[in-house]
Image 1 (cartoon, helix red, strand yellow):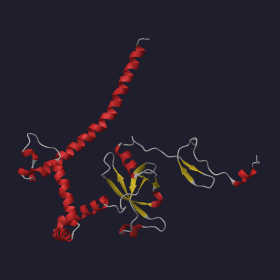
Image 2 (image 1 turned 90 degrees about the vertical axis):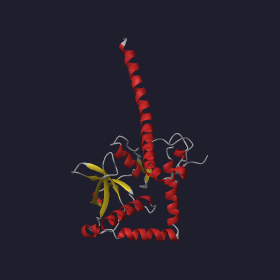
Image 3 (image 1 turned 30 degrees about the horizontal axis):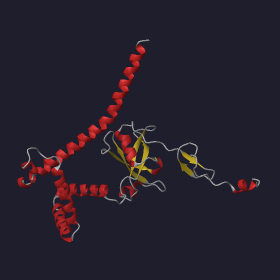
Image 4 (image 1 turned 180 degrees about the horizontal axis):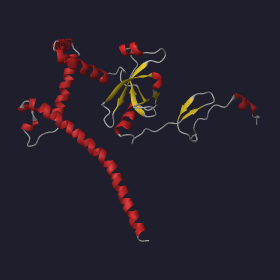
Length: 251
């Protein structure tokens, strides 16, 4: 009889610890990553700031984040200058110089195209999440589906009515690395989850899965997304059938 309260008390303590750990761990990791990023930017930018303009010269302690602020201001100014004719001419001149360097030009063009794709609002990034059978039949891997573009690969290997689609299969827990594959459209199982939900699923190694929305089908064959539950009180009721409404006797 005396062991039951002890077991119950230890269980509560364990639950309290796990709850506190779940709350504190993401905050601590986020703060650590942010602090490390600020320190990394400061270590790159602060050595190039003149001492008379640096607050570290006049204060007995270093000011964290000052280099990051200076970097943000400089990047914004460069973007403002690039939007003008003079700045655009300077950038074009620099790109022509890089274009004459055999090894550097390939790296620069690839990085520029990647950043333009990621940061632009043209919708050229991944548009949907899907599943493909990899590495063997019966085993499914999560992939991000890119937009369908006409490339040399499509022209060489396309089948009529079943085009090849470029998909990116990320690795767990780092979704920035993975494999680029071209898969038949008929072999891809499309999912309704968003790209963000798919990334969370990969980073958490399947522990954080998005909520599943049950799809209901009406008599007309239309799909309704929602959960299986009774409508709330006061909610709008669907329109009754004319035959049913007219068959009721008038009071």
